[in-house]
Length: 264
Image (tube, rainbow, N blue to C red):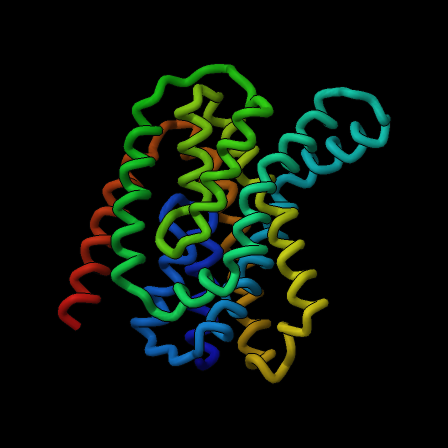
């Protein structure tokens, strides 16, 4: 992997982390097209670093919301802010379970399995189409909703299923307000990303020997900058109910990926 490849993959991650088209799926497609020969562990490391960059961009975009949540929680009262934080914690449970018990199985899927990516993009397209047709409401995410959305997030760990697309779609299909669904979707992933980074650092997985530090840094910067743009854009798109356009896009890219895997 060279500098240009790192920039391209970083931009892909930054844009597709928030746009409902599967960042992990596009990264795998990008690596296949660019001829990346990384072993699954190194490939996953690069993916994790780019996700870390977009987690930071999420914090920048939602900095006011995060500060209000922290201030509200420090009052040590059962208020809306503390309830929201508890809902975030509940939503993390399914992904934590999958990460703890099926991590090695997940890693094996991040080695250029383009057929899987194509099929999962088709699943993402169906979810987006259904969510786009749902009526808008003023309903907040409930505690039970938070867990169900968390299950969607855990399933979206598969390359090709959009995390934001799956979680926002699930939330909207549960009858929640689209804007609130997007806010919950973007904030719920932040602690998981930081938890993953902390776990990898403590276990010694993120070492200079396991990947090129310069390439990781360049990819990180590209993902962070493009993530700032995409996160802001996606919030506006969800409000305007434009998810069906991304459903069409996922179908097209999914079919191309399936054809690529079968005939290339």
